[in-house]
Length: 444
Image (cartoon, rainbow, N blue to C red; front, side, top):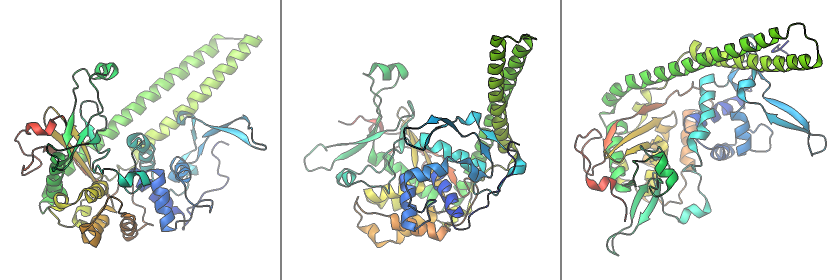
């Protein structure tokens, strides 16, 4: 029968922990498949086919739900013969039409459902952003924008890109700005956001706000007190998000039930008519009913996983204790090192041009403290160039954290979102003074 146990899967003691690490890197650190493949190659991780790691290998693992312990049928379908001899055309089936086997057929999981679900959404969030540790030959000679793809415009939610403009005098240094791609002169842009003008922010201004944020919430001596205030808000937001998701799934189940009742009514209206047209109509109704049945089972399984399982641990205060006390680290760091630190903390900013404010997010994982400690004590920190690679430091931190450790979804993740007034020289991230006019000045 459907979902009957024929061969039960068991974790591979050698390869299983690496699969768990793939999901953690993807869901928590938001890394690309290329970066994950390169990390595994450097670490000597065994590949599934023994031919080495590639982005395609990582992608195939990330989209396979069998690592959650669930048996899923109907993920692909055969569409006929291929142009290649002896092969068939295989097409992916939308998730709504997958068939999830009964819980009695579960096998030991390498990741839980929440972490798997989170990994499926990272591609949309990342876009075409290149990871900091993935350098190309062309990028080594270009201007380094430490906050590349990390600053978003609040009005249109688009990523702000970096540009460089010369100073007022030939001897002065170049000025770096982050500019929203919105163009008021573009009819499509103007129609989407009529009140959106040109928006830019100077790198040194937003870098100063980030430095104050790091000194107060990440590397300063008062960070524990700050975290006690932030934790309840983060837990409440996660609970609210899960409840909204559950309500959406319940509404979807109701719509599927309504569609099934409609199909059954249509079938009853045919009565005893056995004409070829009526039989063809019955077959079509049967196909649609089967699709709705499979969709209902998939949505119901997703709802059960969301409501019956424990809420994911999104805050681990002990990680903060593992970070060094290093106030002023970001303020004194050169440009390339700032880029590495922003990546280590997964810094993101939402810039509000009209208010001169920015909302700042920082995320800690189980590898972050080791990376920061390695950077703080590494002798190259005093003389870093954009072409320098910190891949070995990152790998060392991963090894220290335990490559074979398999924490739950988001375990060790901690996110803070304080307001930051973008004013050079301000004391704290919650300064009440309004930003100066330079914070939103358009670059010359």
